[in-house]
Image (cartoon, rainbow, N blue to C red; front, side, top):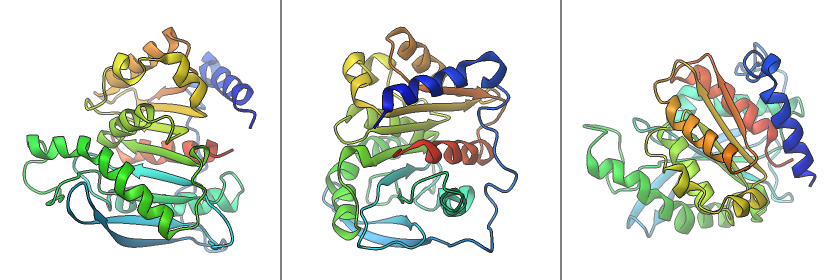
Length: 277
């Protein structure tokens, strides 16, 4: 894998003043529109037992067109926001359509996408006060559920390549914070990390990357994106500045956009097109 050269070139492109703002998240007009003449993947709802929570939990799983046990696939774990659940990306973000289109155009490798409930508690629904302390803490607890329960379940039930170079994590808002916390906290598990409009649950940069040189040597891609009209952009900015100061390669995209699926879908499109290559 020619990761260093690729990342340097990509970062230079995105940081050029003439390109970074206008072109970094440019997407085809139909990137999230279903195409009738291409192969389709599928979305399934699965249940797994969580020792962490001591209950049965649900996750959505996208398998790419032509999925076969004869192949080993990379896996992207895609996380939702504080007010969502395992269906939020599917209902609002069209990840299956975006991936189908990318794969058909050979802009992304065929991959499995796992969309879990990132609120690891017995009653993991998003009802009531979503900012309740217990519910917020459950997003941190999900790290154990993800590492000890969900990933082993996925790797037992699907034909995946379980090398860290074929495992990615990304998310929006609260899920963006989780992706940074869990991804940078476990570089031996995840080689590709993406954060879209990260929320304040994101750890301080000094906690995320206490050993910048080690992190730089481990990660294949670290991606941040946030809309400049998003009130949470300060979270991404502070992390970006810290990583720049400590020379950790990453891609930082800040351009006009809000805290919504219009921005997150574009972020997913570009992130999915970069990973596992």
